[in-house]
Length: 320
Image 1: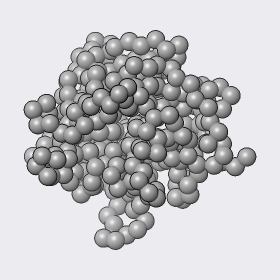
Image 2: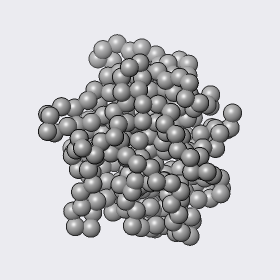
Image 3: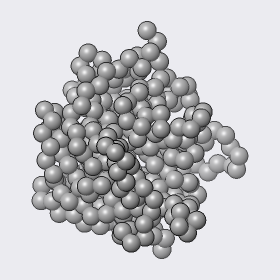
């Protein structure tokens, strides 16, 4: 069986249902999965047996999440830039409505006390518009994307950036600008390559990391910055990197996970029963159980034991 066939033959089982547009799954040391419900809006814990607990209500639009070196949960909050729209049993992100938007921000959530604080709302005087996803490096800082806002009423769409910030709220800088609707973000296992997905372009981009928060400059028209683009109408959401450095990116419209090798080889596609497959993480002792969030069906899925994810996931950076 080829690697392409292995991804296609993965079997999935539901762990939790009835979630309000789940995103940002995070594997916890106790075996649970913590995720956000963008239209909850809240942070929720799901246990392996399917039990669901609300950890904290998070006003706005919690979008991406990552466990920080201090054990707190760091959140990208898009400020409620999407309007929930119900289409039969499905829940989908609708157009921007100015009246419900509260501003983009990066937040820190204490998982024990439930205390929620804003760390960043702007960078160099530029307001954060709709932070989407984040990833920590081994230096204790994190990269995050700002998806921006598409305001159909005003006929405008933001040009935004990829940022780097410190977990203590002391420093934020712009790393890549301009980008259009950046979504998922990840790092290679050795931390020397930064990846991000741009949703509407349906492409995964990459840049070489020179030092924490600084990437190597590139010339206009340098095609090496694009790792992958898919044919037809397929869009990209959030992503995770596995232990071999493969980029596993949630794919919209053609719902599933697209797996791309560091040399840009398309390794396979794992189809999921949700056209808005939003994100994934890896769990279990050997990190071969994949958990995937299905946004519009409100489900958390995982691979069954008989068909584990072909490559172990990438372990989280150790505490600082």
